Image (cartoon, rainbow, N blue to C red; front, side, top):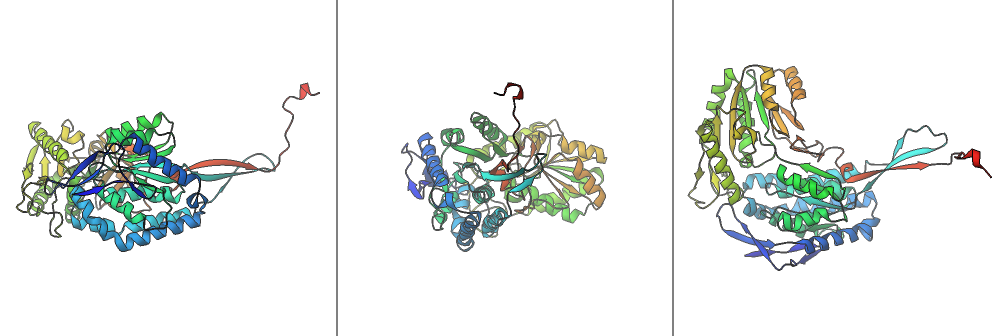
Length: 493
């Protein structure tokens, strides 16, 4: 069984505890590698390495142009060696090889984009009313950034955090999910082949409460960025608050998709399938609530059920597999429990709704793609994130009702609107409480487009034109000589 150690200051480091955690292959149900079980001493060593690299040496002295060149150098390695990362992620979280290859073949683009974005950031002149004095805003890195990533897309989400953080001049300690750390450690191996100085990128692994919390609380961590559940986000925010440090939280979702009667149903079917069944619904923006005009409800649901019935479940390493296993055993149990709860609360299960044992992976964590109708806002399936291949469908009669149903959620990460009326699409998009709204497509992502949520889906934004500045502090600098009046003229000697 392969063993992965922490990656700190360019070296592979044994865990201080001497303990290890098994990583289970979701397709087989068996352990395939082990990772270091981190603890507070490991977090402290990693932060010290990152702090040292930030304070002195080639990274601390590097200009924006030099940092951009170093990130492009890392991107060159990723562009030519990304295939070396694929197997580790699939073995860790069970994602289909076609999806992983699509993500990883473009991994280098995130680093290139933010390297170039950094070169556009310059001191900014500010208006002021003091004669003879210039006021400018300068932008400076926080120092050490703690980046905590989830198990569903570890390397892509790490890129969303790491690329702008490094472009801004910070150093980083990454704490991947203990359920899917291997691909991040393989990525660390590739970073060691680049010209990035040791200590700029560090990876410590282990459980959240054992290594993640000490990392967030560490006084030398200047900024925290977290992607995961809303419960995890609350814990991270609480831990960071003690040090009065800023946090970006990209959390869960219960994203609605509204289908109006005039929508192109062929396009809708593809968009809905992509939104909820790609990645097995294990994505924060999963379009898990389908809100359909009553006049087209039955026709659309019938087409969705027919498409789902023909999907091939099996080994995620096979290119023809369309439905892969869920990422881990505890998550399988959670999804199955929520399915049974939905049945018990009166939702009607039209397809799926059970664990499946494909012939080529009989012990894997598979759940058949599931569609429920007659779902009401009082049901748990409507209110809580499943993070699995489970679609909740309901009807509406008016636009106002559709908007009300869409916003009837504690979450506000993403939403979809399907209509041939462009004016209505734009109007309804403005009424939806979500950080991202797609009109007539779904799940697009680009380095230049911000991602983030409202309500319990978190705060702050990743990606987009301001992403690098999310990892920088603004300093106001006053320049020039202005006459200084005597503040106490009545008491002059």
